[in-house]
Image (cartoon, rainbow, N blue to C red; front, side, top):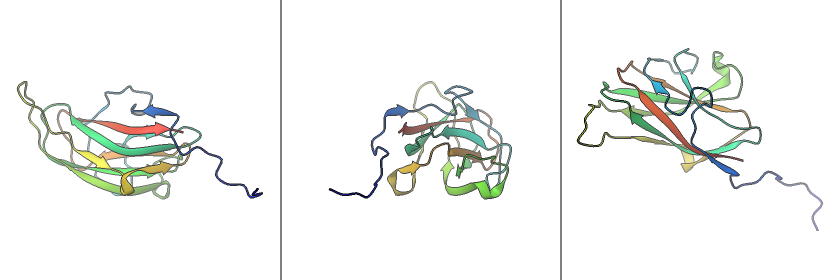
Length: 149
C-alpha cells in the first residue's frame, strides 16, 4: 500500500458545459474588434469560466450570426484575475474567421478552434477570452465544448 498522496481530483468531467460565460446567456454575439495580442482589450469577450474544481475544454465552435467580413479570433487563457493586466493572460492560439453571408438556403461555415493537444485541463476559476482582430457586422457566437470537474 502506497503512503504517497496522489491526484485526488477526478479525471472525468462531472457535467458537460456548453454555456458561454454564465451571465449573458448562450447567444453572446461578439462584434467589436479587440485587435490585441495580450488579452487586455475591453473588447475581448469572456466565453468560458472553469468551476472551483477546474474544467476540461476541447474546442470552441464559432457560428456566424449573419453577414460578416473576414476576421481573426484570438483565444486567451486568463488566470482568474482581471484580464486588463497582460501578465494574467496567455495567447494560446488564433483562428481565421471567413467572410460570411446570411442565407436561408444553405449552411454557413462554423470553424472550430481545437485546444492545444486536443483538450486542456484548466485550473479552477481560470477563464477563456476571445477577441476579434477586426469588427464584424452580425457577430460570432462562441460555444465552448467543455466539461466541469
